[in-house]
Amino acid sequence: MEQLTRCSDYLGAVVNGVAMKLAINLPLMVYWGALGAAVGLLGNRGIPDEQAFDILTDSSGAIGPARMRQASIIELLKTGTSGVSNFAIDQALKDISLLAAWRKDKAS
Image (cartoon, rainbow, N blue to C red; front, side):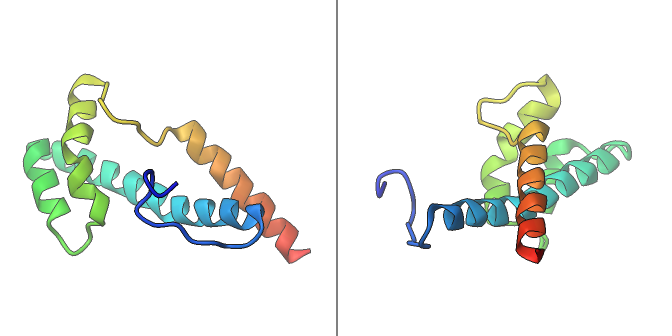
């Protein structure tokens, strides 16, 4: 495990690890979706994707992984494919469904 991750934390029951994964993915889904919408808006203004990403990923609104994924996101925008794994909408929907079910169970 130490070779695969930057750090590992013991959270107790396995379900707690699942809940943490979902908690991490939720803000990432929002960020990546918002970043895509922002670049789409700027592209309609004639601002090149590369320049838009340079400015966005160097701003106070950027998250750590944004600059690291910039090249692959631009490649995906231009070619429809990318050399990295992307967070597909079906994965996001699965996580949102799990979050909703977890929240509902917790409220009961």
